[in-house]
Figure (cartoon, rainbow, N blue to C red):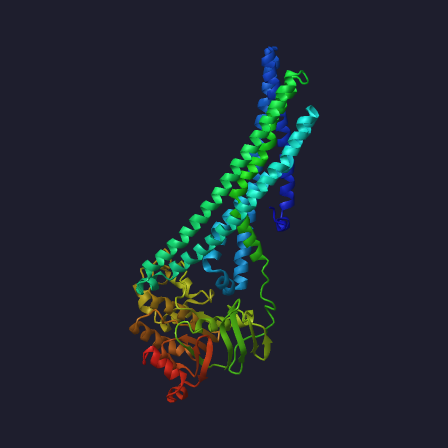
Length: 573
């Protein structure tokens, strides 16, 4: 139930040692509480002096207060440690996701990653706070109580000792059934998260295609499946709790019956018999508490397994084998026999390309042909399954090299606009840029009108809760970022005008043309009018590079794949 990897956490040994000490004192307080409560009752029954009864009640109250205070201290100790551990996990997870890149997100699903960082880590926190406390309660309190019962009446102690494993075995049987159901529940939960997040991301497209209602039904079916698996888990959990309560209550009743016989036969006095009867429920209480919280923390255990598994996922090997100061007109990039896929499903097959100096290379194909995946591999955001890569005369296993990634700008379809001023957004890559350089970038990127329309000019807050910008304005801001850093000579464009209207795209194209000069450019698009600005073109279809060459030569051949693609996409796109 406790993952051994927990003991590698910083400070866990000291925390658990403190938990052991506090639990030991709590067990003694429980013993004292039972002993003095029995003495107070017997004193009242026998008509002893009121002073004797008051003293016994007083000590009972002290033991009760100490017990409750220790429960609060233990919960506070584990809550503080759980918060610390979970925040550590959160930072490590974010670092791991960043190190592994989009490959792991693509494999596991965006929803799963979001759920792990959010609800998953919250469940892990509950796992720390609830389960560890209950485990140590179960490991210490019953046995100290049992030792005292053995001291008072060894026959009753032996009975309680023998019945304990029987109850535990029954609990384990039901617990295993609950675990299997909880695993199915957690898998459905991750599936629901992935589908829900994907639906949110693709909602505009689904609405445009008229598929939003159909997809909502799919989300409903997945959520209904999750509801049913949750209810199946709860049914087993409630059955387990009922069975455990029944067995423990029955065991206490058996103890009471035999104690009664002993009292009637004169084999035992009232005080030890009443003490055993009071302590018997306390003997079973840690097991019952553990049972209740066991089912409540199954999702936490599953989430912790996911978290630890992700943290132990090996990173990209040989991350910094490349030495490249800057991209020059003579620098070469060669990719040969590159394949990429998820599990047994190949997405890109046998890709071979070469680039040199300041070429402008277009990557064209229908949606889903593999353009964006190839661009992500070139950018080092994904790692190839197989293939050979040579960069600046150096053989590298992948392009997730720091020296390579410092050479390029990447412009996606929808550039991210931070909740910052327009000036800070533009200075993202060059925070030390001068005001004159910013103004020059604003002018060249065609942002002069936008700045003039802003209430505070470049100091206007934009993004998220600030002023919103259109798709074309966001692309111009991304272009301004490029213009501010003259040290980067590689540009990666992933269909930057895919969501723009024709007029906005034409205006942006005029702005971009001068920027493309003196850069190595990889431009993924399905709008073929961009080929006029390209020196070379790669034609993608079904994850394969079906054709490559100079655009004019390929277009002159009526049988070429590029002409066929041009026809499929509507001629003049």
